[in-house]
Image (cartoon, rainbow, N blue to C red; front, side, top):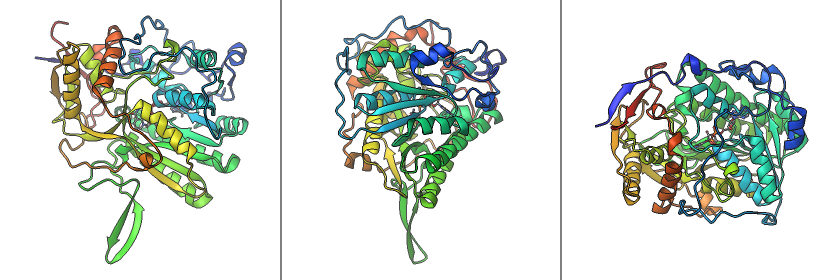
Length: 492
Ligand SMILES: NC(=O)c1ccc[n+]([C@@H]2O[C@H](COP(=O)([O-])OP(=O)(O)OC[C@H]3O[C@@H](n4cnc5c(N)ncnc54)[C@H](O)[C@@H]3O)[C@@H](O)[C@H]2O)c1
């Protein structure tokens, strides 16, 4: 039976980093990467006074951990294409757009940047690199060893011939954002650039405040930048299915028609967010809707489900391009986390009864959904909402799928029902509509045995990087600041 014990806080004092000052790229690094830098003022990291980044001298603070030592081979990863060696000349876009990707160094953003670049669009990445700093702060790391943004961008240029412009800075700093938008003049802005972990936002007051400030003010700045500088630009903003909660009726795509006391209207679908992170997204949605109405902006709010998978054809090309894979109790999401747990013989940690049902999608569909939203833009003054997921699963469904896939690979997978750290229904009705992206042409990659094999294979390949102490839920919704626990598998 799994042993449960308490370990040090996920954010113990020794793990806490802080920022000594502003972030700067040296002239040579700026030149080499083609990076633009405006945000050198200490204000960039004003909100991150929680962190100390000792020795931060370049735009990218690498963790100092060893670089990639192993990379899954094409034969080990069954659901991935044979790794191509070059994509030069593969652009096939009919209408080339200038797309600025906020949060382009993150999990969804990096894969999307490469996909759109390969399709022939001009792509710029804007990122404060704060996600890498969260890892330093919490003492966690992605299972897959990711390269610095500069190295990623350079390797992409070598392989594809395409240049990705890079702007390192915080979108909460309006001066920085204004500079980036003025200089790139985007046709579309894709906004992934937020703090995206619900547990992180529930850790303590500072992180709740950081999350809402970072997300709500960042988005507000983006809306003002579009209005002031590029009013025709289409904003494609990542929201989450978690904004809706789990109502006992079907979830519509953004709006619901209600008849009340004999009168009928179509209104925004009610939101019942379940963390300070999800609440930041709800506020973003309201700000977007209002800006479209008041200023005539064009925006698409993508209520995304939980994303799984690690490879897209582009990130699979080279180990320097590999995407991040989070499995820890703060940033790890269901399914990715289960695959890593299974790969290292850790019991799958089902929270509570496991009946929690949500929408899920493959990272390869995330990048395609973004492309579809960009090439079919919202009209001026229109606020569109798409539910961006392809299938619904309960946590128990995922656990049995991973158990079955593990068995096929000779891995004996166990499941442990752990105390649910969240405040949420564990058994409930869930039926969410998701037809608008399919109508635009999305052909979903449904969760298959092959994909699970592939994910398990990636996890097995990097198993030695797993830190068992980071696996169990580290944050309780009710007991803010409580110590995390971990499950120690027998034999360790
Ligand atoms: N991953 C999922 O399963 C999932 C599900 C639903 C919705 N989403 C949404 O999609 C978006 C991307 O998620 P992800 O998993 O790629 O997250 P991520 O943390 O991997 O990436 C977010 C990126 O944004 C950057 N960033 C954060 N705040 C910034 C700021 N103020 N200025 C500039 N850059 C900033 C981070 O450094 C990071 O690189 C988020 O908005 C998230 O809420 C993700």
